[in-house]
Image (cartoon, rainbow, N blue to C red; front, side, top):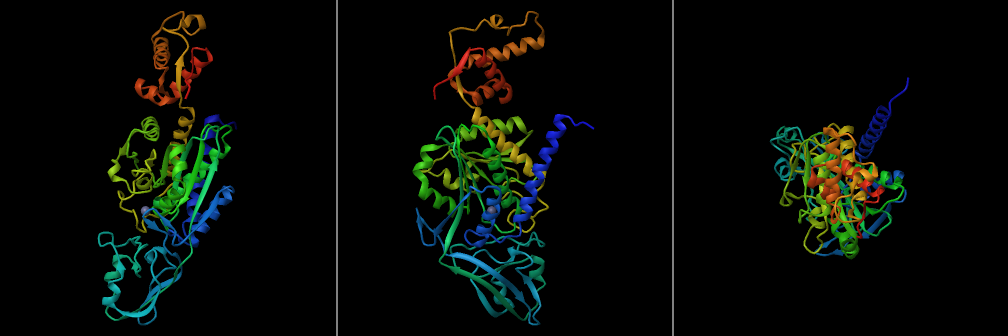
Length: 440
Ligand code: ZN
């Protein structure tokens, strides 16, 4: 049986989206934090797909603007046992059970003392919360509220076998050079333990976008792709690369929460009208029926650093369910059942389309005053009909905005045409020698 090109494409895409889900599943069990071996293992796995990913280690204690890289954290084992030695809470069952960066502990405690070190969510009694304490030394466990309320009086053995020692902050960096030194930045983070939408969807979709970019024949832009721990990682990276990024980055995307199958969310840059904002809105308006647009004041990931005054990069975030806005966020319910291959795949397509448009986005100039005589070029129909009239109208409309000031995104937006349609008309006008790319 023969398959149509469309059905072949569809099955190729489904295969690709399935591979994305498989990578989320593979990385899911790893205990990650803002430093430590979990980040290294995750980056090693990504290197299997992207061997040119460079892994950088920056020592604990290194100053980065107002921040200092904390000690490195690695955990081996943790549990709470009752007086009979039964493990009521065990890190082996779920790595969310220990607060991120917990100090080591090994002692007997009363129920009252234990409760001071337990975190739960009374309104979601079956979910384990994700809690961290990166910059204040403490020990603690995160438990289902149902577990907490079932604890009886008595003594408990609390045990956390973890290191908080001078070490390194680890991040990954990948650069694909293009024809120009102007850059597109893709930034994602690799610092959450077993959590799927926030956060494994981000590095996984980024990895597949990187593979697509690697295969692009002639890239116009240079692409810089970062896998960092959130907040401290972007601050450290900016402290080492600020001048370069400010000079070259023309558009950037923070990839986070791109794995579930709910409504898309858009977080603009602080300036709100950068090239990244324009292309993101263009693609969202064209490719999906509806999305939620947030204000920059509702930011929450690394755009907090990239868009801060003094850095001021054109960076936006296109998400599915936005961090902080969905019930499973930062709990054990943000698991492998929340992300789907279709959810990951659509996020991949949206970001890929943004980059396709950025690659094609140029301003053009007409080559002579007044309207061109289209019939000289076989572009004017000899027999008029409604449909033909509209296509001629579109062609002349696009021509009217080849003024050197309007780029593809702006022409499409002004005329209410799709970027694809607009691009095909611009291609015809270029082929006919009626317009040329304006000097940049
Ligand atoms: Zn998070």
